[in-house]
Amino acid sequence: MKRSAFTMLELVFVIIVIGILAVLAMPNFNRHPLQEATEQLASHIRYTQHLAMVDDKFDPADANWWKRKWQLKITGTSYDVFSDSVTINGTVDAGEAAIDPLTKTPISAINLATDYGITAITASTFAFDNMGRPYNAFTIDVYTDIVTADTNITLTHDDGTAIITIRPETGYVSVTYP
Image (cartoon, rainbow, N blue to C red; front, side, top):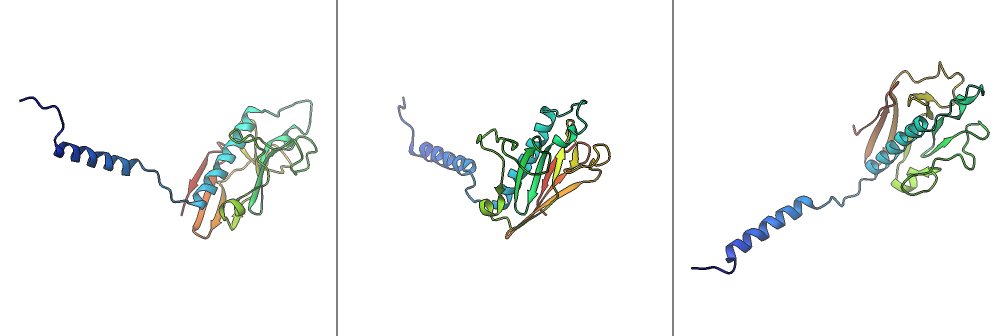
């Protein structure tokens, strides 16, 4: 006997399998603002390190070459990524901000409070050299102000806290949610 159609039982099994696969493949639509803010800041820290390694500021003819390192400056709940190349005064001047490769906009005055509801950021401003090593941002001496211990950036939100850790020597960035 030749069959030319599926039985009802076979169709039901196929529909059940497709339903299970659809539930497993469905993205999570719940928004986690603390996680989003933490991942954005960690990504911009990594990008700052990348810029520092690609855009080597070393110039033996200039005694202040090391002051032009790429920096991430945190002020309150906002931050900037810039290279202090115009006036070397620790402030973001026009044309010094890094450009986000995705949005093509300056990474300047990114406010995590208005965008994600972050209530506080405890951190210091820091910079990276041409080998990706983290430094205190406003260094006095390029050889003595290298970071020698883990640098922690804590983001506080109504839902909890997140910690971004930057390792000395390598500048490796990791995120934990205690």
